[in-house]
Length: 122
Image 1 (cartoon, rainbow, N blue to C red):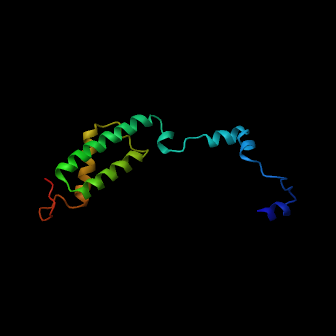
Image 2: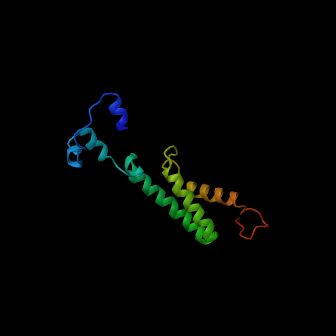
Image 3: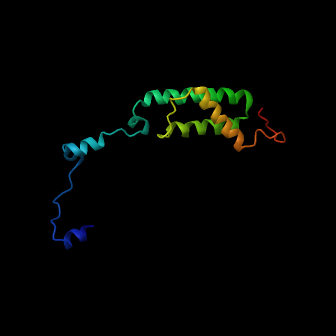
């Protein structure tokens, strides 16, 4: 990169600015002060996080009574992934519907409706 600056006849900076000097530039300060978390950047993130926690609670409650720990863990992991998706509006439908859908997906993918399976979900 330095060679390309020299080839173009550009001047080399005398010194690199330190962090205090960079923070004086409004664009740099604005960029550095942006939220680091995805949930911080999402409008109504607090409500969404509460909704995800409610869905995970219902999923875990069902999983403790009807599933083994492995399938319960998979369901909770899927709930986390759905909660991070921006395209899905997790706040529109009742939490029970979301929890049931998550359990249904895990059950179908792991053949839990198959009577020949060790863990049967009816």
